Image 1 (tube, rainbow, N blue to C red):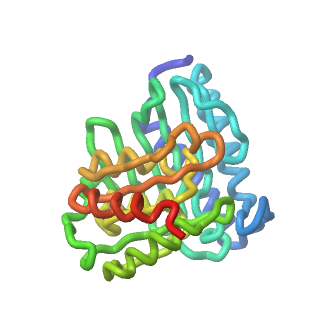
Image 2: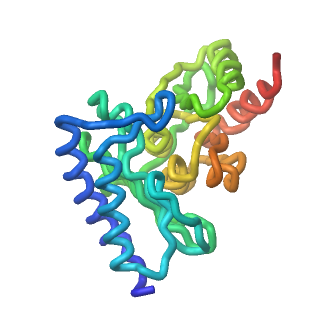
Amino acid sequence: MTGQVNINECIKWVKQAGVMALEHYKNPEMSLKGTQDYLSQADKQIENFLIEKLEQAYSGHSILAEESGGDLGQSGFIIDPLDGTENFLRKIPMWGICLSFIENKKVTWGIIFNPVTDELFIGERGKGATLNGKKLQVSNIKNLNECCVCLGHSYRTDNSHLHRIKGELIKNKVSLRLGGSGAIGLAYVAAGRYDAFIEEHLQIWDFIHASIMIEEAGGYFYPFDIEKSVKGGAAGVGVNEKLKTQILEIYESTKGRL
């Protein structure tokens, strides 16, 4: 490898990628990968740009990217060039450019940047989580009937369990949201905007960046199967500590119910 990984240099590249994204955002072009599964021209350009920069600076590290693939090595980068592509294409300003670094298969830091709102979320292991330089803290809400939960869904998987979760949350008078971006939704948990985020089908590039933010902001992230998330998608929950027991109980108790 060609030197110690510098998070500030990586932040600079992510912000440069944000400028590219905003140009495409004015008049986005897209194609379909599957049912409600979109790919924009911005995805390709941003991913290629970040891969090029990372390969030039840190050639000894692996790179796993949503569109290009790759390997999840012991030490390397994970890229989601544009999380929330449909939001991007519909000009809904809830999407982000995501980059993380892992060492010994454990995330060291994660970056999520939303160029529309100019919000830069960063989580660094042992150093906390920030939004535009200000410290993040998960919410203190402890009652289900006072909390706001964001749900994510994908047509790549059966959503019957998610419907049961939704029904149980409604029964408990929870305020619900559907955001369209797992990365942003989880970052919002770290920021205390949502009290929890639940999705049945997350891939590693959807959640890894925000998982460290939630943990460093005093919350709890539960990847139900991290290896499965690399291979094809798995469930994950991000939640503040005071709601953790109740939210996970709802998740587990609704499994397999007819």
